[in-house]
Length: 99
Image 1 (cartoon, rainbow, N blue to C red):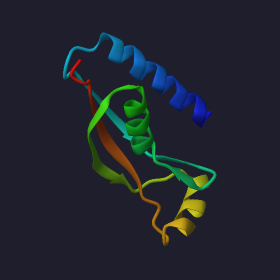
Image 2 (cartoon, one colour; image 1 turned 30 degrees about the vertical axis):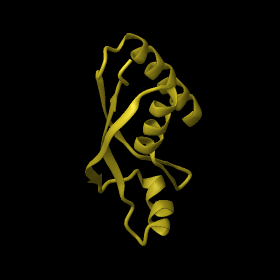
Image 3 (spheres, rainbow, N blue to C red; image 1 turned 135 degrees about the vertical axis):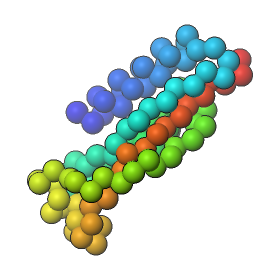
């Protein structure tokens, strides 16, 4: 499921880049997630995928920390993070290269 999401995002980034003008930007507001008690840094992974397909990461900025985590994830995450599960919501800004 997680792999399919990132594969879909890579396809989306490729299509957007093929239609992008010079210095076009894509702004994504995403939240980190957790799976089986392990944080998935969605913002950082999307930045890496964007660069792999040809975008330039202009910025990844944490907008806020999420204080609420689903019940089944709270216990596992809080053990990994000193009792405070801290997922985040981030703005990922990608810019098309100068062609």
